[in-house]
Image (tube, rainbow, N blue to C red; front, side, top):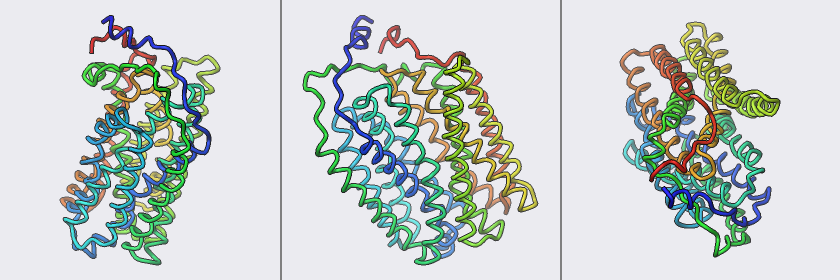
Length: 418
């Protein structure tokens, strides 16, 4: 125990200057990340017809990204600790840009499946590298603002990707969508490499802070609780991201352009909500409200609201189902605004990287399960009603995760043997 305590009691390190330009590039990088991972869903109605895929095969393709994305987050976290996170992130972007670009030339199910696996490997570098860069090289007092700006890319990526992707498909076809977005993604590397080249290296004598092991983190019920809430949130989120285009076009009869407009509105609502919810929660806590009650309250209300909207999506009337889907964007924002701050608070500065690796892995299991389950259910039933019901049920169960967290405060890792 003494070795752990001493390792956690190091002096603060001098940090390289990370200015707003670099933070802006990280924000754009995450935005591109979510644009590119959602391209397949946007193009799915046309790809499905041209390649002769059934709904189960489409679900496998929509899920395949997460088969590599989830486990490689741990690998990317290790690489970011071992080598320069700036370089690892650049390699990841180059890899996923290639996978996106090459997807415009696929000839069948197998080639597209392989490229989705490559995309998952490349994009897995984003969150671990971002976390390492911010935790190591940015002053703690600026972390909230930086994370808020970067996190806007999560809903805005699908918003622009769905709307812009719909326009591109109407103009150039689905293959042009992948080629254009893949090329644009690669262009991000130019300013990034120029900015990184000017970054000063960390001091050679900087002390190394040890973190608790993965098993020690997994042993905490708080980790299991927030991860369950994260999984439940992600199940409905990935259900919407993966299947909304097909649902709107095939089940509701909207055109590709109309689908892009509706999807874009949903994600814009999400983006506004995540920013507004974060500000409101922080102000409530600053005014003296319990951080535990505020974070848990936002998490529970968000999940229950999402579940209610998924039930509304089952409605027979097109208008009612569309209104429910658009309203879900607000509750997705409420839920998202508390998932990551809760994990970061519980973990503290010494364990945040590994904790978020574990939490993201468990939470992103939903990305594997939701698309496949949805495709199977739609194939068996011929409609989306049961798929919406499953999403509502899984999301509601996530409330249990928030209830088993007694207090949201930094855990004492000094008492943990690694």
